[in-house]
Length: 313
Image (cartoon, rainbow, N blue to C red):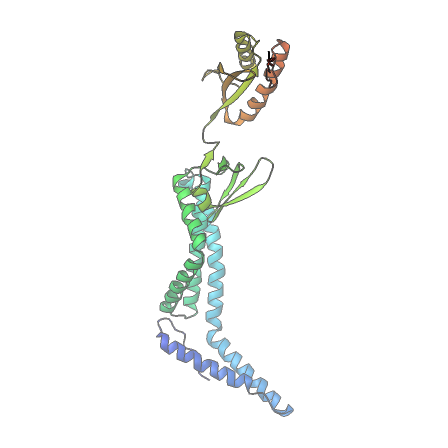
């Protein structure tokens, strides 16, 4: 039986011929079944000889390739940990850093697999040809996924948001960014739902980053009856704002009569606060202004319509 000469640099046509001859020998040995009980011993002996011959010839290379894969994958993991804690990467945002390490992990593991194949004696020319063909096929099959990868790179470069930011994508439900991956970005909504967006969907959508600035403005419109005194209403709202500890004095709050509505006067109120305090201030103003209106006898009217009936003469 001829052994398979898998040495690095072997001609591809010679390797194919060797493989064909080796498989033919194995097939002849294994499929030549014994015709009687007395021939079983010789048959098993021949099969064991084939296994032993291949184990002696290629067992060392196979073992070396396995050891290389185990050590290589372990080394990549350790290297990722070391790099993530290195001072040179401390200034890089965590989302960008995580994305870089994920890409490095995939590329490094592919490189280790190629080295293991080389140790086994697979010609590098064949490996490159297979990788090229596989890359083309995978690229055509995963066109959308490759688009997500490209969009992920764009998100890392432009940095419209980072992990921990509260974002709203395309007018959908907003949430806190948990992870920016190679293919997808996941967020968690305030009611604890997980939403996973393809990176290409985020890159092509209108994005609102609520956490981008440290301060936010709370906007409200309060209504009163036409009988209410405008100065009294403004003074009442300003007093509520002045007593609230979370509302900023600079920029100065804004309280003005903004519209004569069909059934009520409308007062626009704008107050600034820290971004983290936005919803606290938002709901506090609703509750406290209503209580102040009640205490000062300021009426909040219902929609109403005056109907005049003229009698025919």
